[in-house]
Image (cartoon, rainbow, N blue to C red; front, side, top):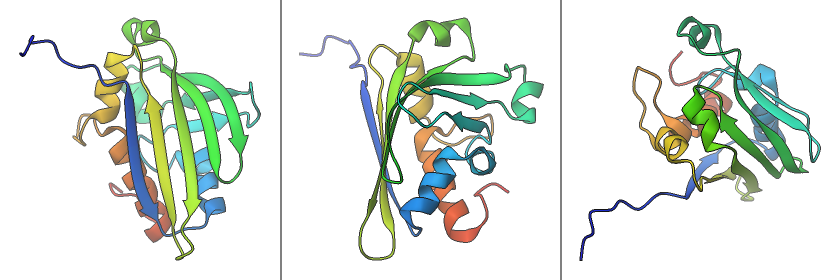
Length: 166
């Protein structure tokens, strides 16, 4: 029997294979000079130790659209370079986004032995329906794309030296 009630997505798992070393992928995920080159082009800044701060800064284009300087904040939970990074994050785009609170991201980089790595992003989204919708969105010219867009762009940059939308 259909109650008409939609199920809330509480965990998203995204996986991609990237022809790069674990160290190169780790650097692309954690170094601001890399994070500003793919996806939404925000500079991610990590204090890579448990309890360390994490934030993503807006690009000039984002600030021109009225977004704040810091668009995401969180805390580093676990660090095992170059194979695993766990951190929390919360969107700071609006008061509604802030009110959803923090969610949890796990990055896992697994060498396959065949010259490429499997990268898995697990995003735990309990109680964050706005973030769940945004991170599951498909690419569009108004800023959508979510995790699929981000990790596809990461793959393109690492494998070709160019982001998808250069």
